[in-house]
Image (tube, rainbow, N blue to C red):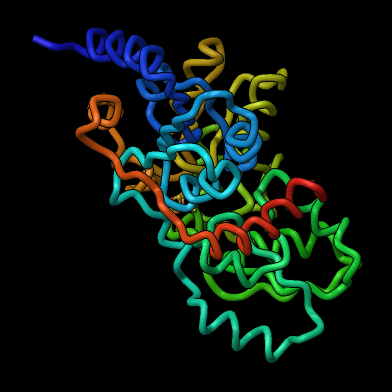
Amino acid sequence: MNTTQTIRDEILKLKKEHDVCILAHAYQSQDIWEVADYVGDSYGLSLQAAKTGQQTVLLCGVRFMAETVKILSPEKKVLLSHPQAGCPMAQQISVAELAALKETYPDYTVAAYINTTSELKTLCDVCVTSSSAVKIIQNIENDHILFIPDCNLGGWIARQVPEKIIRPVAGGCPAHAAMHADQVRQMKSLFPEAKLLVHPECKAEVTELADYVGSTTGIMEYAKNSSAKSFIIGTENSIVEHLQFACPDKRFYPLSKDCICSNMKLTTLMDVWHCLHGTGGEEITLSEQVMKQARRCIDTMLTLG
Ligand code: SF4
């Protein structure tokens, strides 16, 4: 009978034989982390995608991430681990709606969270990730910024960069936006010593109560380097498990037991196995025109970030 160990060993052998680089988002499960060549947040994955030497990249995450890899490395074969894994936020605004907004606000620079489709990126001036957003927005010359599609992240950036006029467009991550201040108070009463670390996709009522607000990578680094011994984590619950693996001498508690991204959780170790056998996943294809136009705003992100 196959076990996690036998499947894992076969994946490690196959990826070497077929010269495949496995990139995994931090919200993937621990077993997928353990077969990946690189694990990180959206910004880290983008940087890694641009410099990896392998000709095939298998992205364990959601569709916009695989599209970003394809745009940065058009000559490579890019596979998405599970064809149905998409980010609902990436499609909360349509191309037509964004075109109309640009007409309404012609003097604004359009900044897009990287969690957007490649078609939307063709209309944007620059992308940001949660770890690079503040620096990039500060570095944009224009003082007027239209920010899509996460109004919570946009609002948080606006509070960090008060010298700019930032107009966030309504939208957000269903998992992060569902957490609220009452949960913070409840968890703080249970674990009064614990530090609260949250993602900027959370509502302002949550980020305002936090000891640290940052990307998944930032949250993990903060927890590892802190002298505190317990933490309440306000982001996707995989991070609670990964931190517990990384720091067995500390304790980590989810702010909400419901902060689970069902799309990120679609990919299993067997999906990775099938991709390497050629019996699963989806090869990402994009038109030349979309790749060329969308690349401008990703390149601007890499330059300004
Ligand atoms: S956690 Fe939220 S923003 Fe991230 S992929 Fe899932 S739905 Fe999208």
